[in-house]
Amino acid sequence: QNMYSPVLCSSRYGLAILSCYGFFVAYALRVNLSVAMVDMLNSSSSSSGANDSVCPRHSSPARPKHNHTASVYDWDSETQGWILGSFFYGYIITQIPGGYLARKYGAKWLLGFGILGTVIFTLLTPVAADLGAGYLIAVRVLEGIGEGVTFPAMHAMWASWAPPLERSRLLTISYAGAQLGTVVALPLSGQICFYLDWTYVFYIFGAVGLLWFILWVFLVSNSPSSHRRISETERTYITASLQNELSPTSDYIPWTSILTSVPLWAIVVAHFSYNWTFYTLLTLLPTYMNDILGFSIKQNGMLSALPYLGCWLLSMGGGQLADYLRETCLFRTVIVRKAFTIIGMMGPAVFLVAAGYTNCNYIMAIIFLTVSSSLGGFSASGFNINHLDIAPSYAGILLGITNSFATIPGMVGPVIARSLTKSNTILEWRTVFFISAGINLFGALFYTLFGKGTVQPWAVHRVHIQ
Image (cartoon, rainbow, N blue to C red; front, side, top):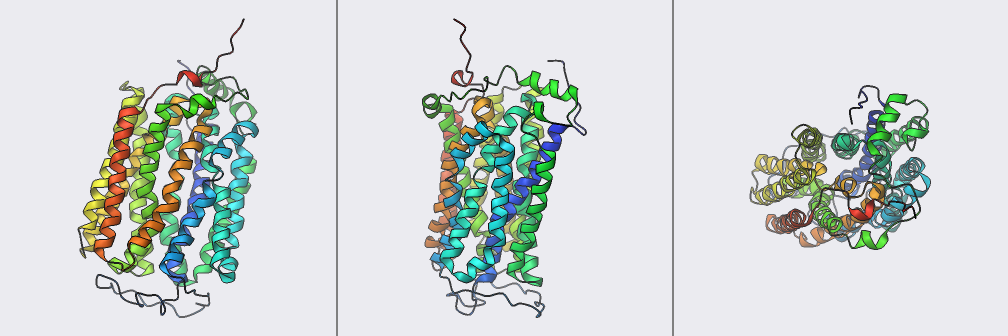
């Protein structure tokens, strides 16, 4: 394969950047509630009292007194757990259908309308919250349903767009939008709550999402062959590099082989374990910062974002490094995937437990939580891309399967964590961290034993000529 197509101004990197923006929107809309939640609660009635945190509170800047007119609500910690977890109940429903529909009808419109749906329900959030916790939960479930198709659809799209040796790079750029959305949305939501009020969090990010949808509709195509502005060189380069890997598009899906594939179950276990830590922190870090470490919402958003900033940087760097090791140093794909998964799962486990022992040394606590999440970024080039290594033709469906399992931690993690931390003591939070770490170690071990790096026999569906 001596063909090469330049990177600059190429359609495949254009797709990577625009899908990065898409995931940015998807994650911003997913996490903004965790920050807004701190402001949506009626502080005078909350069980812990307005200013009680385990550690001494840090002086928070005086809030501008104008226009804080948004309603506040009396929700107990259990209701909060359900509101924060409800998104995932919708999210899990559309994972497998998402992979299937993207394969059948094309990923572009599925992904576009999925995120558009999420945007519309985000704009309705303040209305729903006023109607009651039940309505808010319903809106979040609907947001989840819309967002559930995004990863499977994107994986299906990359199956026809990403040349095998550029896979880690293109996919890490694309999915980095997820961390980036988190990094920007957490501090920005804090600032918006501070200067305006929490309702604007949903209006502002909703507007950013609408802009993405317009760009996506006009600039993106399902495959290189249907793209209007792609250069002939690039089109040939992509199709030539993929011709041995993709099965002829047929409606045949080897469900039995897929569901009994051990390498796939290795990804499932790794994905589940990684997300347990990821989602528990994602939904509860603002609460932990507020109730234990005593940070105000304005400092809180910035500090809650640090771990994801690290995660974003290391996942981008990791993608470059992973492809370099495979392409230039000729490391076997499976070795690279396993090494990155081990670093990306063992590392976070160790530092998460350490964070539980920092007590009120908040600088150490934040450093450990940041290092923990940052190292997790390596797993993006580990098990996360592995679907495309073992079955590129069915990557969307495989991702739907692993992401369904990997969504369960989002549903039960926050609820379990909130029920374990009823009195909000450091000891209780330590238990939460230990559980996450244990699950992570198990996942890393399982993947190391059973993961594979080559296209599985059942994924190359050859047409037999009689």
